[in-house]
Each structure stands twice: as structure tokens, then as C-alpha cells.
Length: 227
Image 1 (cartoon, rainbow, N blue to C red):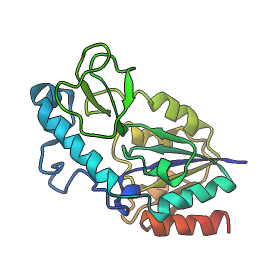
Image 2 (image 1 turned 90 degrees about the horizontal axis):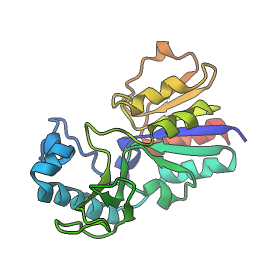
Image 3 (image 1 turned 180 degrees about the horizontal axis):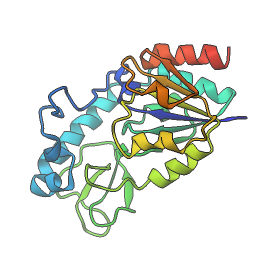
């Protein structure tokens, strides 16, 4: 089967009711991004940061995968599908996708603030004083602004092998994730699904834009590639 690589962003989960974090004014749930999504913010006010992600984790329990997530699972019948997501929710996995790579971390995991290889599954609130086995405070398993993206090299290797590239619900403005499109072979067809597509179509000879949300857009994709 052909290799299909699917890059997903906030728009993929928006139709499940997941808030897209950053509002039009640049604030995340009323907080400056530097307060809640940087190592410096965590060092300055760890309780605020922990509660911010506790709220995100609670919200995640209240929602489920949407039909767009389920449509990607259907594609596994005809393609070797690898999802590379910027989202920190687990909706792809809960929908049934078998190959999911999280570029920016996962809400339902925490890790040691001393040793980033010590990662733990986590369902409940994380509070100050909860420590890893090496005695350091645990923190959200999230890639914050200013931190390296440890899974980027793996994502590049996956993208290089793509026979088909699908991009859903991402502005393609957040780097380094946005750079992945540059690692496909020139002849690889690209399907870009977004209600407000922000991509220069003249740069890509094999680009098909589906101006729609994740649910309707993936329905169109299925009709074009499978049905």
C-alpha cells in the first residue's frame, strides 16, 4: 500500500470542541503565552502552569473524536497512514488511528523536569510537589516555546517516505512543523484541508486545496481517493 502522511493541527480537533488555545488577541485562555507555555513561565509560576494544563486535561475528558478523526481511520484500509500531529490531545488514538506521532507532546502524559526521558501516563491533576522517581517536580509532557522538538527528526524521516501528503486544520505558520512539507518528493500529491487555507498554491504543482473543515474535508478526501 502507498504511504499516506497526514499532518494535523488545531482545526482537526476544533470540531470535537477542543479550544484552539490561542485567541485572536494572542492570549491562551486569558494568559500570555509566555506565562503558560515556556520554561521561563514554569520556573516563575509553576502552579499557574500546572493548573493551566490541568484544565486542558479536564476538558479533554469531556470530548471525543469527531467524524474527521474516524475518516482518517477508514483510510487505513487503503493506505499505510501515518498521522503526524501538532495537537496534544489523544483524539486520533481514541478514534482508532494506529500510527500517531505527537510533535508537541501529549496532555495525558507528564515527565520529569530533570530527566526528559522519564515520561509517565497521567489522567488526573498534576500539582506542585508531585515528583518523579529521581526527586524532581513533574511537568506537562508538552513542547513549550523555546524548547527543541525532539520528534522532529522522526517526523522528517516519515514525511520523506510519503506517497501522498494530507494537511488538515493547520495554518502552516508554526515552525518547525510547517517545514515538513518541504521534505516530500516533488511529485507527491498534496491535499490541503482547511476552511481558510493559507498556502501559496503556485509553489506546489501537485496541490489540491479542499476549503472546508476537518469533517467535511475528510469526507471529500475519501470520495476522491477511495470511493
